Amino acid sequence: MASKKFAFVCSACLWFFPWHAALLAQESPAERCPRPEPGSIVAEPEDLRSQDGVLKVDLAVRDSVEPDGTTRFCYIDAKGDEAPTLRVQPGDLVILNLKNELTTPGATASVSVDHHMHAEPEARGAADPCNSTVMKATSANLHFHGLTIPAVCHQDDVLRTSIQPGDAPFPYQFRIPRDEPPGLYWYHPHIHGFTKAQVLGGASGALIVEGIERADNAVAGLPERVLIIRDQDLMNPNSPPSKSEPVIPKMLIDNDGDAANNGTGFGKPAKDVSINYVPVPYPDYPPATIEMKPGERQIWRLLNASAITYLNLQVLFNRKAQPLGLVAIDGVPMNAAPGMPADFVDWQTHLAVPPGARVEFVVTGPPTGVQALFVTRTVDTGPGGENDTNRALAKIVVSGDAPEPPSTLGNSSEPLVPSTLPWLGNVTPVRTRRLYFSEKLLEPNNPNSATEFYITVDGQTPAPFDMNSGIPNIVVKQGTVEDWIIENRSSELHAFHIHQLHFLLLDYQGVPVNEPFLRDTVNVPYFTGRTLVYPSVRLRMDFRDPNAVGTFVYHCHLLEHEDGGMMGLIRVEPADQPPADQGVKASAPCGNSAHAAAKPCSVAAPRGAGN
Ligand SMILES: [Cu+2]
Image 1 (tube, rainbow, N blue to C red):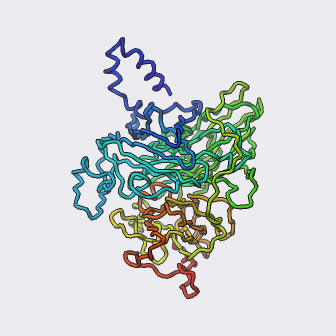
Image 2 (cartoon, rainbow, N blue to C red):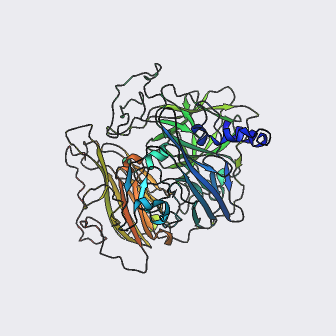
Image 3 (cartoon, rainbow, N blue to C red):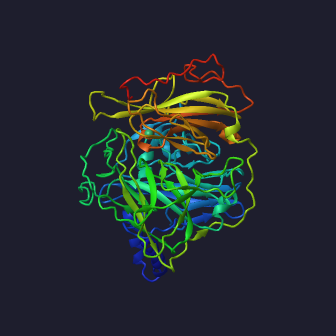
């Protein structure tokens, strides 16, 4: 990045030209969160590796308002690198100090969080960031997406942890579980009401638990790339679609105010996307550049850090889709189930990745002379969903002297620490719960009205998530396993995510899949109004790990839905304590009991009721 070079050169010349110091002090906004130009070479994020079992990191979260009025957000480490990849071994200690350097002017809107405390929001500077009363546009915290670490302050709490500008660097300190599956995880802010703005602005980075080659020998020794796809507001919002597009669909706006899905794969997208911050802007989508050697095999570790954009990835050689060797999803090797081959690779020609999810896959570089493109194809997000268009991400340019990625997987075949628990698919669930996504126009007769977003435990009253409530929607006991059916009663896709744990996808749309691996984020198909049952997924939820004890959230990972209320609260009680009946939201016993006496859940969808 140009600004890094600039800083390096001038740190030497400062001694001779003191006036440079004054110039540097007046940092231009662009330098606070520097970004490459469209078409740039895709650079790897810098790696920060643990040493002797400890990873110490200083991060500052910054923002900058751009000339077009959009706001960038970024994490900058002590060396000035943006969004570094945190690389840890199972069992390592992470010590991360987060300094809030957010400045967004005019950011006055805030979600007032009253935890029944008497602290005044005005006393914020001196307030305890572990028990904050305010979440606003310039607040900061971190969620470590996918890690089974405790939901407590200084580790992975997002309900009360809120760091304000001016606060001292806030220490996060947690241990990576010894049996955490090796793979790609990530960090991002989780300030309720402002998560979308911050993530859309670029606040995200990768975290890798090392050792995937020990779980899946097929990837041993491969050069690795970390690819982070982010979305962002359109750089050219007023441009007509490219004349090269085969159809120019009518421009429609959805309930979120984004360009609506028009079913063609063309037209104006809801958001632009970027690949390792190289933007690929509408309408011409100039691809970024990935350099490889001809025929070289690499593992691409890809995170969809988009706020709302679904991905449907392909690698094309002369327009023909190539096999991609999927080896991990959501940080979990595809051969996690017992009895799976040690060198398992699932070859696919496209990979669907909802916001928040990760895929790790083997890619072979094209032969010389072949046109190679890394693309995302359109995703049918439903009649109420956003327009996720066909577009390029990067062209793959091969040459014999292409630089190698800075990181390469090891060659060890020494097995990882095995889980002491039986495979989740072989455990009998203690109960089944049904939850559903739904949306409601606040003015039903006005299609432009504001929308409320809900995730509701069947039997409870749909309501947007309330930071002030503190009353869990669901109470479970550590040590147990439950089956959850997640329905979608809305006309757009949602991506279900729960903190602190992975789950097993048992059924998709009523069809058993019993995947041999785990996920932490899953797409839930949309309701067309034309089926007798709502579309659903069935998940086996794993509450066995003692680190899951605590109170945390599950939500849709389309962040405007999450910010808009599509989030619920769960309390996992310690195993040695009977579940409290008090303080649980009233819920009809709809299939939430293993006993036959439980009332069956209604699965029939009322005709035309798409709410
Ligand atoms: Cu959603």
